[in-house]
Image (cartoon, rainbow, N blue to C red; front, side, top):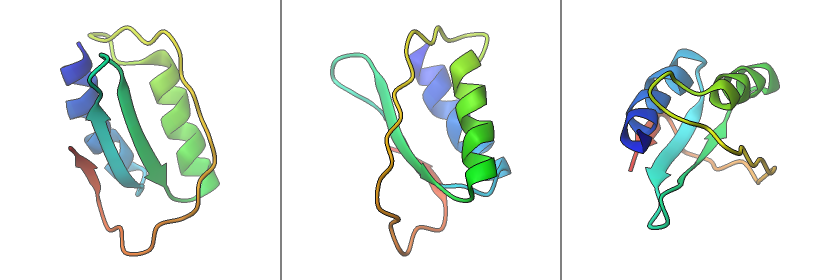
Length: 77
């Protein structure tokens, strides 16, 4: 199920013109970073909070970070 979320997130983020990345962690979680305008970030967070039908989202943690120059896509690591 985590693989599904990790594969679908780049498409969803790109549709909102966001850049960043998503990856599975060794402890079974999915982590990532996204950057873009506030409205698009909020849309993505709303989508993540509900999760795709094939995934079970238990908790969504969010933190603000410095913008990274040079990102031009949203990648799956």
